[in-house]
Length: 253
Image 1: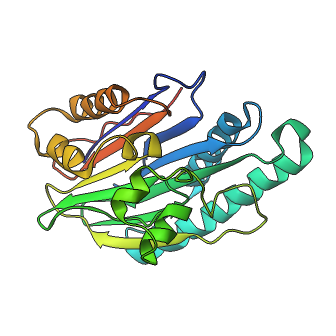
Image 2: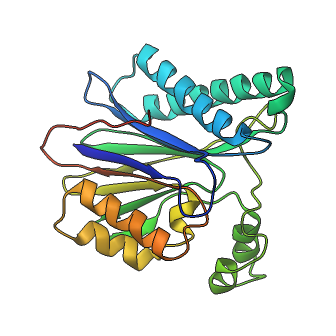
C-alpha cells in the first residue's frame, strides 16, 4: 500500500485546527485518521491534536488480527476512549470548555477497509464501481437533504451547512458509524476534512485520483484547487492506494 497525508491552513483561517496522520502496523494494517477541531479560543486545534495523538497511542498499543470484525470493534472502542479523554479534558480546563472535533478513521490492509466517522469529515472510495462517498455526514444539511427538504445543490450554499450533530469531546458518550468494504488492488480511499469536500466537487476529486500522478502530487493538486476556490477553511487530505509498493507514512508534526 501507499499513503500520503497533507494539511494546509487555507487562505483565511489564522491557524490550522485540523490534524491527522497515517500510521502503519507490523501486521500489514494501516490506520489513517483526519480530525477537524472546533470550539473556543484555540481549543479546536487542541481537540483535534489530542484526538489524533490518543488514537495513535491506542493503535500502537493494540494487537489486531487482520479481520474486519476485529477492526470494527477496535475502532468503536478506541474512538469511545478518545471521546472520554477529550470530554474529561474539556471539563477540567476552562479554556477548553466546549471544544470538540470531527473524526474519520480507516483501518485497512490489502483485502478490506473499515471506516469509522463522527461529524462531517469524510471518506470516499474509488474502485471498479466508480467514485462515491462512503461515509454519511452527521450534519444539519445532510439531514435536510436526506429528508427531501432541500436539494444537494441547495446544501452546497446553505447558511448552516457547518452545523453538525455529532462530534468527539462534547458529550460523555458518542455514537460511532462503522462500515467495512472490500479493498482490492488498485482501489483508493480518500479521507478529508470539509475544507476540501466543501470546495472541490466529486468530479474533481475523482479526476485527481484517475490521474497518473504520484499520490503526493494528487493531494497537492486538490489542496491547491480548494484554495483557488476560496480556501476559507483548513484543508486536510489522506489518500490511500492499495498496490504492491511499500507504505509511506506521514503525520502532522
